[in-house]
Amino acid sequence: MQKEIPNIVFDSKKPYNIGIEIITIESLALRKKDIGHSPEKVHQVAFNMIVLYTDGKSKQFIDFVWHDVKKNTIIHLSKGQVNAFRFTKDLKGYILLFTEEYLKKQINTLPKNEIVRLFNSHLFSPIIKVPKESNVVEYIELFYKEYTIKGESYNLENTYNSLYSIIFSKLERLKQYQTFHLKRSDKLNKFLDFKSLLEIHFNKSRNADFYAEKLNITYKHLNTICKSIIALTAKQFIDEYIILEAKRLLVNSEIKSTELAYFLGFEEPTNFVKYFKKHTKFTPNQFKKDYV
Image (cartoon, rainbow, N blue to C red):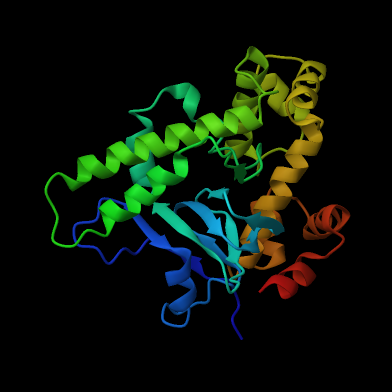
């Protein structure tokens, strides 16, 4: 019996690949038996991914939630997220994959205010709805055409980088319009600082006071910021973050719940089991059994 879900790594067959690839949804559906793992089964991605649906209706599984998808839906996944497709007869589209290293290089060429929405999976929905007036679909289709040209190699890296920058910027703009209530502000900046601290110290402290002190603000102020940005208290956000990290580790490693409890900073494994069950209605072992 398989003890963990697959961790899918970036593996382009294209020679001299710079860390980016694009394929069609149809091609992935057809070759699902040839890649060692069905994309319709739950897996974790070790790269970033943008999925554009151009035809059909279906669902996509992201971090333990099924999302409805249809024509002109874009899904964005970051490295480490849990994913699964559901292929249907008329489903068509494109999947743009890129490594963390490629992303870091590209971020250096983009305005800093353009990286907030796409790469905060704990903060925003992974879904982007493409309005009729947007031409982002045309650029993704153009990227596919450029990527699949046979025998062409001159200046390809610059071509890919330029098209990626355009696509990225357009997606960030769409995301900004669809989350217009969240403007760049001192509150948002402080929340992102809080999130960054949580990513570093989540297995050291689940106490909101700990993070407020590191941010040099009061617990009450941190709560006000969190309620304003995500409609949750600081403690609720901490709990959601830790539970999601626990779920990802449970389904993609052979770690036992006892070991996971200590890794997440619980002094007693029984306390972790109670904590996990309180937030999910399952014990860690029950959850793992259901998803593997």
